[in-house]
Amino acid sequence: MIASLKGRVMGWALGGLALASAYLYWQHIITQRDAYQGEAERQRERAEILREHQQWQRQQIETLNSAMAERDRALTIIADDMRASTRALEQLGETDAESRAWMDSDLPAGINDWLRELQRPGALDGVRLPDGPASPGERATRAKPDTQ
Image 1 (cartoon, rainbow, N blue to C red):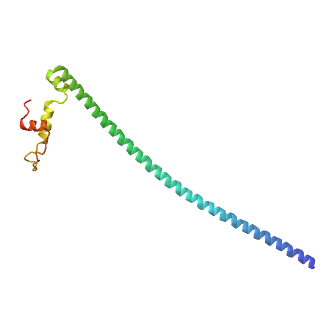
Image 2 (cartoon, rainbow, N blue to C red):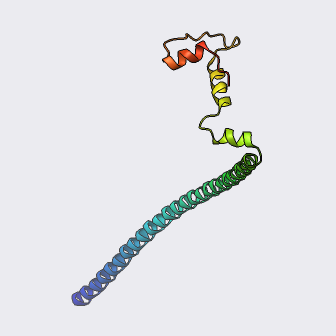
Image 3 (cartoon, one colour):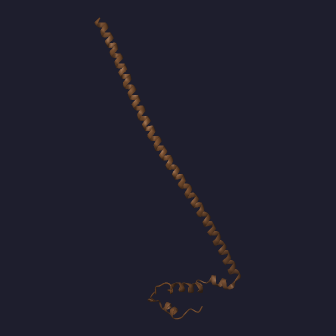
């Protein structure tokens, strides 16, 4: 009887140990699954943030591309205007001898007069500029008006 009792107790003990082992293994698997699910959720959130940032960057690139295209159109218009003006000036120089001489000079007389006029204080400026020291050439120019 004792031997059979010992056999039953050993069977129950081994069965209990097997159940306890299975339960602990099951708990370990569930814990790992929960950890992996948590990590997967964090990675999904991170991926969503990265997608939103990528979308924002695409919008910025589109904005910059449209601004650059607009700038290129404006520069093309300006370049066309400059070419047309240059052609008109060249044609004027070819047809008018006085204009040709004016364009061939280093600094046309009209430009000198215009610069001098800009440097003189006007009545509306409200400020009188001192004559100050001047080079001998400037003193002669101030003393005698240009007759060109």
